[in-house]
Structures are given as structure tokens and as C-alpha cells.
Image (cartoon, rainbow, N blue to C red; front, side, top):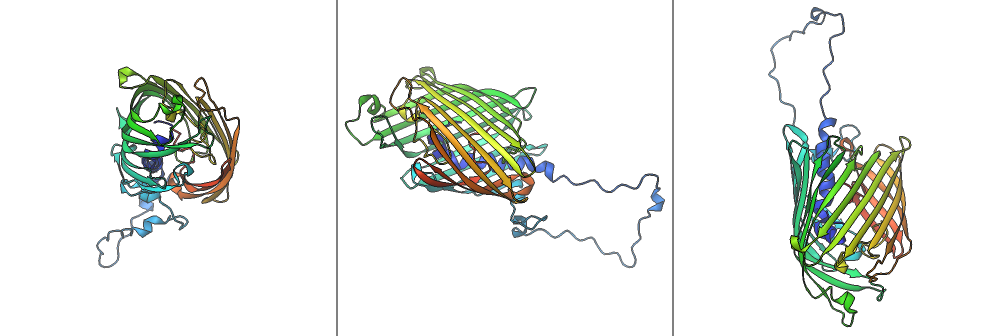
Amino acid sequence: MGKSLHDRSRLAAALAFCGAATLATAAYADDVAPAPADPVPAGASVAEFPVSQPQGPVEPPTEPEKKRFVDRLFDEQDGMLDFSEILAKGGFLPVLIVITEKAVDGGYGVAPAFLSADPNNPRLVTKHIFGAFKTGNGSNGFGYFQAGYAAHGRLSYKFGVAHGKVTLGSYPAFLPKGVEYTSHYDYGLLGSALWKLNDERFSIGPLFDFRKLNSQIDIRGLPPRFADHFGGAMQTGALGLGFHFDDRDNPLSPTNGLNVLVEGKFNRDAFGSDRDYETYDAAVFAFHKLSPRLGLGFKLEANAIRNDFPVYYAPAIDLRGVEAMRYEGEDVVSSEVEATWRLNPRWSLLAFAGVGSTKAGNSRIYKDSGPIYAGGAGFRYRLARKLGLDAGIDVAYGPDGATFYIQFGHAWALKMD
């Protein structure tokens, strides 16, 4: 899917929930398989273990007492709040989203989700998610997201369609304090279809990205090379190719493994685009458990855009503690390292630090950012023990001050495969 805040703002609720609750459903099947019955000891005959005969009247068998809904919210092992059963049962799940991003002045959303698993293969889960959001700066929208499998699980697909209005800030080199603009989306349609190779850790397949919008900016007297990108209808159409590698131990809150993405999309007149330009994205997410309590995570992202691109689609530094879309350029690198210390099976603490930079490129609309640093700390609670799903809060500090994030699954979940 697209990497800009435009995609995340309009489809944030759907993507966030898809990456966690649904994959959780798939993982659940292996954890709840019933244990085999105790066998008769070797060398013993069945006669040595006679079936006891009932004494007196035989009572009719009674059905096991059904769990109340509230009982399903607590783990039978430690009695703590736990959503394993709720997430794994599928069906309908209402999800409320709290948006804490400074770039849109916070907000809220809702994402009703409908999950269904293939009865012959519980790991193949189809997700149907409706989402809507509203933010403090007047942005709002709604959309639909679906993801699933075909060809007996060898093909994984996902697509989303949305409509809405997004207001953001842009910080061109000639206006360092920024200028606000609003994009009205008639529609945005994005998706992918990835085919698993013989080694199922590898997958490859087509990407698509189609949008129709009208972006407006209120300030007059701006340089034409910037202002000409606003004030009219714009249609983009892109096809591309994605290559993915994934051997993480858990797609929700991974502790070991590697996730690598390489993607390129090409906007062309032949695909319905008003402008010819290309976007390139590559990312590496690595996880390693140093001990039963201590784990490390590392991410490195590189994003680029070329040729006649709309300025509001330029990539930006993506780090906790850095305002979304604050530092844009033709070439962007974002890196972050995270250390997690597990206090007990439920609670853990983490610390993270990152650095990113941008290059203005040939357009010179944006300036080179130089190194931009950010970091912070947070905590996690094991929200679903059987699924390995963590949730919590991060507090981060960057060039523009402190902010906080509510995390469901890993903080990098939206970018990982």
C-alpha cells in the first residue's frame, strides 16, 4: 500500500486492525489444539485398567456450562485481561481508533471488522473492514478494506478504497514555517496481489494505486513551481511490482526474524495518470532476541520519488517523535532501533531512538533536512497471550517537542508486510 500520510489518514483504522486482529486469528489455531489423551502404559493390558462401573442410577450427561462473554475477556491461565478468545473467534469485531498524530491535531475513528477463516485451513483468513475517521483539523473520510487468500493460500491479496478530505501542512524551502493545504479525494484505490514462491518466505506480485483528488491552498503569491500543484483536479494511476521476504516468528509483535520489502510504482498516462512519475520504497525490519527477557529491533527505510510528481506526494521522514510529513524530499531515509525488556509474561518496557534525513533532489522545492533525531520510551501489555499480541503507549520526543502514540501490535506494523 502507499507510504504517505494520505494513505494512512484515510485508511488508518482498516490497516491497523487488519495487521493485528486478523493475523491473530490465523495464528490462534496452532495454540489451542487439544492435547492427546494419556496412553495406557507400555506392556499393560486393557484388563489391568478396567472401566469403572457406575453405582446406583446413571445420571444423564450434562452439557458443559457455556462461558459468559465477560469470562472470555480474562485468561484462564493467569486471570489477567486477555483478548485471545475474542480476537480468535472471528465474526464481527467493533474497533475504536484514537489518532494522536500532531499533523492532523489528533482525532478518532471506528473500524467495524468482519473476519472469516477457511474451514479447511484456519490460517487463511479473509478480512472485510469498514472504517471512518475525523480529526481535529477538519480531516475526515471513510473507506473499505479487504484482504484474503486465493489459490489454496499461495496468493495473498489486499485492496482498499476510500473517500474523504485531508488537511496537512507542507514545509517548502522558501516557507520554513509551513503552509496548510487541503486535498478532497473523490476516491483512492490501492492494493496488491503477491504470489508465494517455492520458498514461501518469498513473494512477488503486482501493485496498483489510483486516485482522483482536488488539492487547494489558500495563500496567494507562492512561487509557481509550488503553487501550480494546487487549485485543480488531479488524477493519478500507477502500476508496479513488489518483492517481499518474511520469516518473522510473529507478524503481530515479532521478537525474531526479518521482513524485507522492495516496491516500485509507475504513474503513466496509459494507466490514467495526469502526470508521469515513479515512487520507489525499500525497507528492512529485523528482530533478534538476545535473551528470554531482552530483545532488539531495527528498521531501515528508503523512499524516493522521481520526475513530474505532485509535491504533496513527496515522501517524508517516518520516526516516532517526528511530525508526519514535516520533513519531505525526493530521497528520504528513516532508521530506528528499539530495545525491549520483558518484566514478566504480561508487561514489558521499551526504549527507542531514530535518525532520518531528506535530500531535496532536482526539484529543489524542499531543502535538505540534515540529520533529524528522535527517541523515547514506552510500555507494552500482552493483550492476547495465545497470539503473542502486545499493546501499549509510546512517548517520544523530537525536534518539535513531545508526543505520544497508542500502539496495537508493533509500532512498525503499518509498514511491515
